[in-house]
Image 1: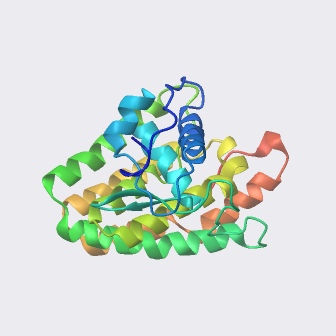
Image 2 (image 1 turned 90 degrees about the vertical axis):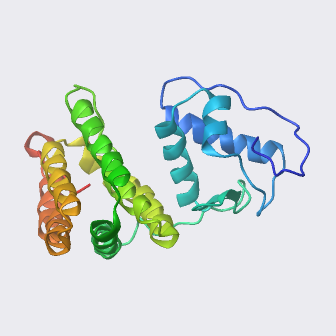
Image 3 (image 1 turned 180 degrees about the vertical axis):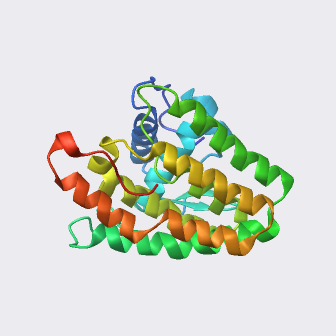
Length: 250
């Protein structure tokens, strides 16, 4: 259950529908926290319980939890569990102000530092199971990309890489970066043009991690997060809609 172990249960979770699934899961968890008057430090249920009670898959639950974590409402402690971090009715905590003049550039530079460290750790200590999980993420992306209505999920691969490092600090920051990226790149992502390019770059990064080639993995991350490409994509996005064909790295 979502309440702390000592709190009385006053409401139950409701199964959610399929439309905008992760958003609805996040809304349901927020409402549960509010209705039960949960306080910072109260422990939430593990993923498997959320999946069962909400009637959704692991990916939808994780995406919802990432969004709530990015807002500063919950805290995910690797190897320990999930806890309420702030009142759901309080002001959200934001890592980036989307109104900043160079918000996207600042975000890319921050991503570079986090993801550079993540691939370094991944290339030196990933297990066979870790590599299999990363490959599964990319295999699913390939399947999704074949669909006509696929909407690229920012930082899905990068979050998986950071998660396998076991570094909870890196993971918490990357979760916030993913949420900020959604806010800053929505219009860019609507002008689909680089999805297959990003996927190919992710595959190359994974190959370097699998081979334990730290230097190559770092180089590929730097190329994937090229600030020059971001500037080009921003310039293209600012042109008339008929000429918009690209968007920044994911």
